[in-house]
Image (cartoon, rainbow, N blue to C red; front, side, top):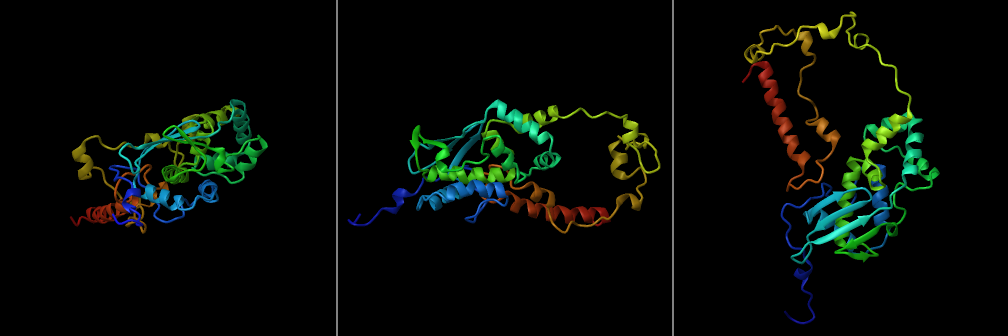
Length: 293
């Protein structure tokens, strides 16, 4: 190689097979405020060219494995050498006493519980954490303990940044992961909130199940268990029972609401591929309903 020229191929990572690919193709990751807060910690810390390189790693599928535990994220990232890098990112967990106080506070605020159960992180929940003397998000990149191949890193390199980007997408889908990294699972938090509330008075099912004519719905005629009679329509189906039958204007609306498939490893984005399947299934389903098949 002529002197004075840089061998750019030396800095290219080895091709990773079956790696986890970032679903976001743009520079901005996440649609929710909590994900943007997480990315702000990373992007506000000057890292020069390492930031776009790390993003390229995440988009190319260089991250082979990610495990999110209590206070610790471990990952395996394929870099330029044959042996992949082993990454760890440690978070400072909150004490059990702090979590107990948090559960008690949230139990008294129905809006907190409702939003958390629906997969949302109410923005004013940060004030609750602050009152308890803790921060939900890292306030600075230095608040996290990072290692690459058991060597401590003061500034994250491209392999660590790639893990950050993939974590951001997971946080966008499941904000409870923030709490898990602080030492508490979603199930344990919900259970603790429930334990802080008074048990509701149970009523008989007959008062809860019924139609507008005050007839118990559980006494309606059950569907036939005979598959031939079921598919051939042994029981009459009236038009008013069907409601408005039409092809949905937005294909795969429920799937889009749920978000991208976690830790996706395919070449094509999951929701993009699924949208075509929903379009075809809707058309075929309507044809079957109309008897045109």
